[in-house]
Amino acid sequence: MSDHLVLGKFKPMSELNKTIKKSYIELNKDEVNSLIKELDESQFRAQQIQNWVFDHHVETWDEMENLPIHIREELSARLRLHPLEINYITDSKNASTQKILFQTQNGYPIESVLMYDQKRTTVCISSQVGCAVDCKFCATASMGFIHNLSTGEMVDQVIHLQRQSKTKITNVVFMGMGEPFLNYRRVIEAAEILNKKMGFGARRITISTAGIVPKIRQMAEENHKYKLAISLNATNELSRERIMPLTNTYTLITFEYVLLKGVNDSPSDGERLLVLLQSLPCKVNVIPYNEIGGSYSRPSENTINAFLDSLKHAPFTVTVRWSKGTEIDAGCGQLAVHGDI
Ligand code: SAH
Image (cartoon, rainbow, N blue to C red; front, top):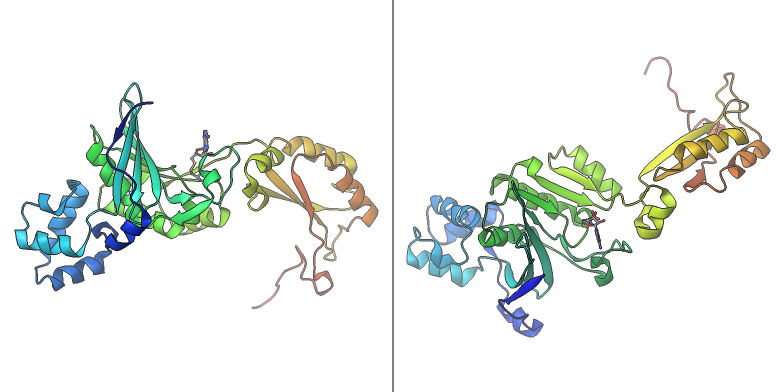
């Protein structure tokens, strides 16, 4: 890295608090509409302002040439245009990468990266100040969690970077500071704005997660078309746990294994299971069979323990589901409804 270009200095918090104004970029549609109404203007002004910001990436209200001066003045008295200020830009030696340090209105520092490739220009944006996930190899983790970025603060990184960029930005990745899925709602809203107002195709927006499983599910259920990247970083559960402690909470894959007497319950079955799964980042949940009146039966406690013993040195976590509710047929595999319902 070279050429540190200093554009500004961090302001002390005391100074900042006096100057905090809401930013246009953070307003939702209803807020923009009521602002235009308050200014006694017709609604086409909303579209004009939107174009100046999201298509032309203007820095100041004054650059909005087709707005009468009194509206520009009125707007600038009420609102900031951008929630972020650029503080510092670092260029890589071969000019393929720029790192931009921003300051939020609350005085927090965040970083984004602009990367020029032959065919594409990618920006990597932050979703949080600091991070709570605590991956052992990541610099952001050492900050701890400080603050969730607002939707506007995320979108504004892209707007500023497009203004800085020599070429048109083609891709946006949420791989900067923070865990996007611990700020899920705002990240999705930011992606929606990038998609709908700035014209980035959904497949050109990638959200990366360390593996917050419920949010991965939610993203799938909500049918978003953005790309998902999962930071795997290990090939088995134990080594992933060491470097990414959230693995304890969110195992990547859980295999279930119903233990049937005389069928799959021997120690050599256990050894084969170990060989089969040892290279996967997974957890195995062993479920002693709950009898349902058919030809299979539950292994004895001794057999179950011998099976578990054969998995003692497995690199994955093994848990046993001693099913509750078996006496009322509410255990695993005992639920069945027959006949008319
Ligand atoms: N929290 C999200 C997104 C941010 S990190 C996530 O974990 O996916 C983006 C990527 O950088 C992740 O794949 C992360 O594992 C990786 N990473 C973190 N620290 C790194 C480092 N020091 N060197 C190389 N990659 C790193």
